[in-house]
Amino acid sequence: MPRTGRIEIENTFYHVICRGQRKDKIFLCDDDMECFVTLLKKTLKRTDIELFAFCLMPNHYHLLLKRNKDKIEKFLRIINTRYAIYFNNKYGFSGHVFQDRAKSFVVLSEKYLYTIVIYIHGNPSRKGFVKDPCDYKYSSALVYKTHASASLINYIKPGMVYDYDQMLNKKDEYFGEEKDFLKLEKRKQRINKKYKNKRFEDESLEKDLEIISKKICCESEKEKRKLIAKQLYERGYTINEIAVVFKKNKCTISKWLSF
View 1 (cartoon, rainbow, N blue to C red):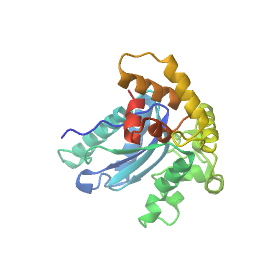
View 2: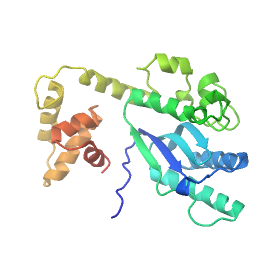
View 3: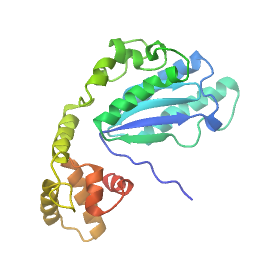
View 4: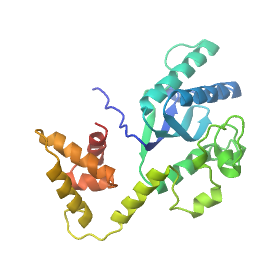
């Protein structure tokens, strides 16, 4: 059975996890990790993808990326292929270095964004490699803690650099560009309104749906629903809200938004 395509949405954060084949180690020494960081820098320059956090572990790596014009799939294909060639040539191996396709999780809320940053940086301490995450060389934890620009991590997006204590105390603060912040603020205002009927989550959604439906003319009913869903999302409604309107699951709505 063929696997489904990765859900790709522009201007969206993704938490990416990529493991070694059979969970084998993909980094056998510091030189391997430094090579991967170098390839990471080059791939970021080559693609329209932004890096906001990372952590390299012996048998896997974590990246917090923001997808812009280029797809996450393209970014991962470039960096994983280049690193696999380096790894196999260095150690005389052949075949796959990475396990199947990298996992990617769409980040659709500020709270989840904070959680992911802390989770990514906490990997080395949870495994007992270090006591303080900032003591681990191959992650972006030090940047967040000290605002420093170490040689290996000076390509982290500056807008994400905040003190850990501030991160924990300011749950409503958002890491991202101004347009994304305003979009989320608008979405929160609508979510906070009380339910005025059972069918929709608020009155504004019902009105917007009616207005958009009248404007869109499309021969295919399926294509019309996709266009309506996309315009609702652009107006700040969540995937959950749109899923309620069309009585579909979130995965289906996400696919509609990426068409």
